[in-house]
Image (tube, rainbow, N blue to C red; front, side):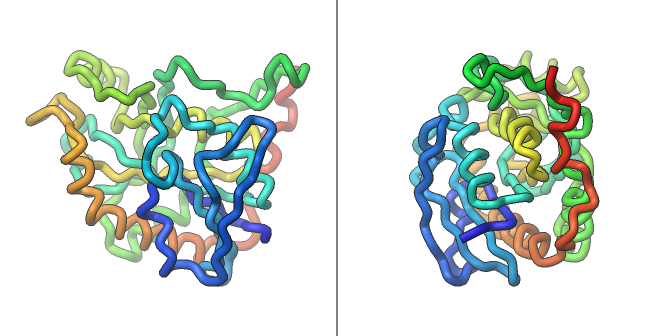
Length: 263
């Protein structure tokens, strides 16, 4: 079954009630195994592939996610557009727990992750542009969708991606604020970069769960779980409506990202 949309996120997003004609597909890739089996089904008249980023039982650390395999597998299934959900800490007062952020930029602080399909083995060097990392067409649809659904959201934000799995120190949290970052997370890089190399449209949907450690008390897993109990329902609504509303024709240039990218 060929899928047009890919959804990457936690297992809570893959709700069987959202899909019809469900299939579970296991794919082997040149880069190893993806995070898990991919659930494919129909949603709003479109075919959607759900992939649990951390595995079905959330056993894969951010550093250990086989992102190249995940993106390659979705490409193999025909995916042209990816909606990637994540949880983040806020680095600013007005981005409050429970809010949704449609970030438009990122700062990369990861150190141990392969960020290209084109390594020495391929015999090519790919200098991909991520000056504007998000698909503008999908980003506009997300903004309109959240407004229609009356879900509190922010249309811009710089996501600083850290290695994890530990949370930030207070010094790091304050430094990220000085750099102009708005939210902090552990998963968007290299996911967004590899999607661009695969010429797939990509957008991030971040749910704020905490204030990192610069305000009030330091973030803990319990904070994240408590907020996500309600936050995941908002993300499901946004994803469902976005998939339904997105035009069939792409007006962006994401599918031409490799043009001029090779040395």
